[in-house]
Length: 122
Image (tube, rainbow, N blue to C red; front, side, top):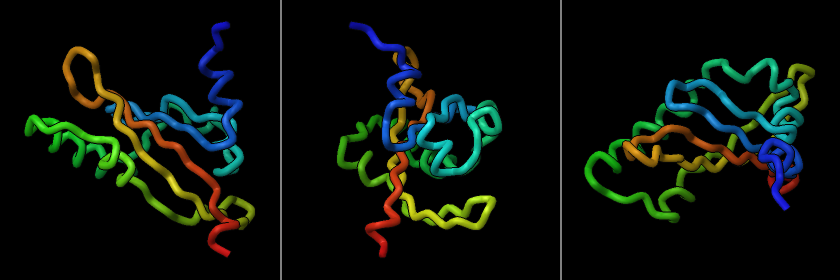
């Protein structure tokens, strides 16, 4: 059985988003909509500059001929508080993973998986 990728990602309990190398958000799943309290129509194809620091550090490693191991990917995480339009505050943890172009080896996308950790912070 083959699944539609968008359907699978929208079924995930954690938020999943993908940012292209030009900093445009290209994917924002249902769980992201709930965590951020914003619709994907409002953010997809918009600029997302937050990931530039991660992008630069991964590019520096790959240009030196180095490999990015799973442990290094896991280290690219961030905890922060999101404040919704209505004032609700949610603690989240985001893990960022680079997605490389098969032909050039350059970073084509960065995928973020975001999880609500509010209960853990109490």
